[in-house]
Length: 273
Image 1 (cartoon, rainbow, N blue to C red):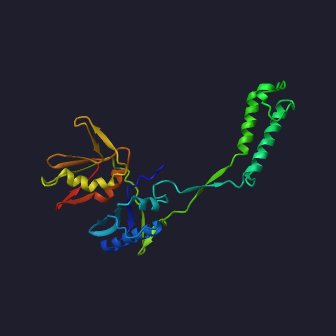
Image 2 (cartoon, one colour):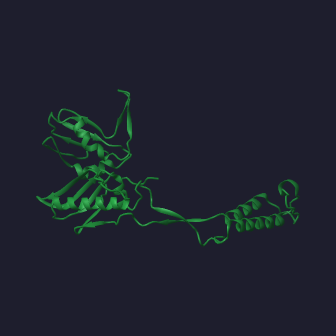
Image 3 (cartoon, one colour):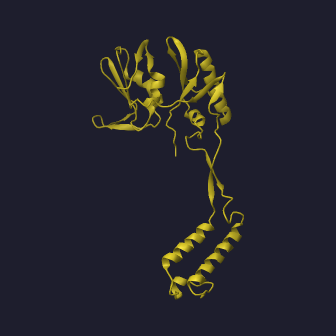
């Protein structure tokens, strides 16, 4: 089961470092990830947002369009599932028995149980439930419970072993740490901005925000009778609302990257309405 909710946004403890330094760290992370994956000459698209306070950089966010990398940095498999391995439980009573010996032990235990419940009236190919007269203290429920217990005791047991992460967390380069970003808890599934120029279209906005969609879900439009895929962009004369999948945290990650967005030379400030 895929448990990852992050579409690919990283938090970078970059301090006062410049965009150029932050970019070198992002490139180093990408190179290391593909080295682990055994893939060469891969250059995924990435976006960097250096956050400034009082005109000075304090930290950064980055988005990489290969979700396998964020999954690896979260200690998950590349597909977003937990990194676990099933191994034989060596503490199991019959762990060291070979299959044929295990079967012999099971047969012996079951025969002993039959004798106990059916007054030792045992024959090799006998079906006790059809041919034997049970003892006065006989209880089918007790018998079945003990039989199930014997079979379970002789079945192979496994334990879950947590595997080490594919990438070190946090990833460090140039003395800067890179971590999976946390979602903004105060952000709902919609983002909005106002003061749009007439030259900014719905397609312009969707081309920027669609990369943060992590699920590929849609909503059925009863008017047009077509699928509206998230994020759904609604634009009036000077205002835009971007609706993300309500069952995801995509908007909570997108705000890290696109709170201040420049489209066709115009700066837009996005917020959660």
